[in-house]
Image (tube, rainbow, N blue to C red; front, side, top):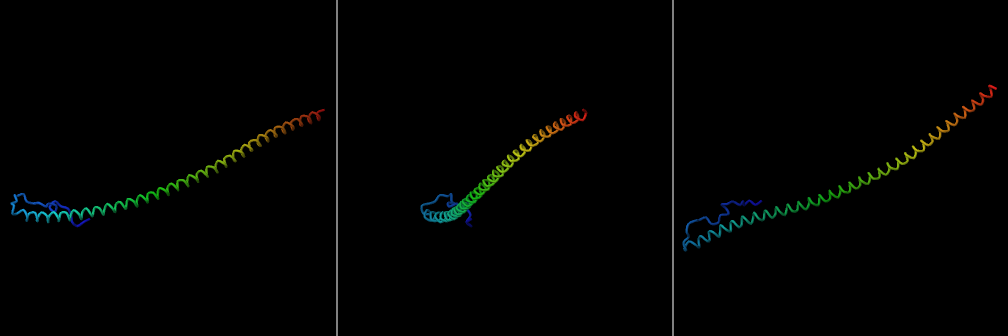
Length: 138
C-alpha cells in the first residue's frame, strides 16, 4: 500500500471561507492548484496500489481455481476407480455365490439320493432278514 495515506486534511484543496478579492484570485488559484495536484498525486498512488492489489488477488483466484479443478478431477478419477473396483468385487462375489449355490444344490441332491439309497438298502435288509427268518423257521 502506498505510504501516502488519504486523509481529509490532505484531500482538502480549498481551505478558506473568506471572500477573495480580484487581486488575490491569482495567488489563491495557484495555491489551490498546488494543493489539488498534491491531492491528485496521493489519490493516484492509492488507486495504483489498489489496482496492484486487485491484480494480485485476481491472479491468486485464477491459481486457486485451477488448483481446485485439478483436485476435483483427481477426486472424480479416484471415485471412478473405487467404483470400478467395487463393481469388480461385487461381480466376483456374485460369481462365487452362484458357484456356492450350485455346490449346495448338488450336495442337497446327493444327500437326498443317499438318504433314499439308505432307505432302500434298509428295506432290502429288512426284507432279506424277514425272508431268511421265515426260511429258518420252516
